[in-house]
Figure 1: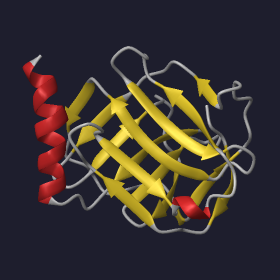
Figure 2: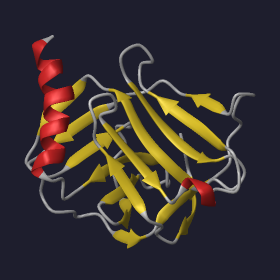
Figure 3: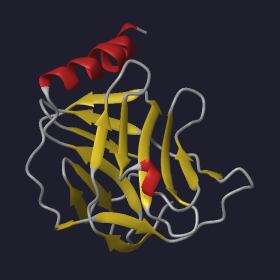
Length: 172
């Protein structure tokens, strides 16, 4: 699991919803990345996969990409009761393979509300979060990265998400 080492300031964030990738969050601008991107991946690796891209040496989060997800639930969210700070995570270095990939099987769940989506890749209790723009990275008491939230999703973005992932999943 990715473990929080420190907090960096908020860069420009872009969030993409399209017909191939459920959600892609990009932290900062690619030309500003000074090191190669390594990927921590989880899911069941058959029809569920999320990739978290981080700087190979420094550990700064670069992107979150939901490639596939099966467990999707409708939810009415309550307001956050966990302490939130402004910033993005910088993770402790882990031992990636020669292709800069670290695979760790685990749960993957998405909760969808009217204008918010939460994705969890751990069942640990959330105790803190880092907020940058519309994205909140969620951590347990041991600073393990357990999930994230995208808030203030527009009707158009939600329509893309529902049409291409939620409705398609419900048809199978």
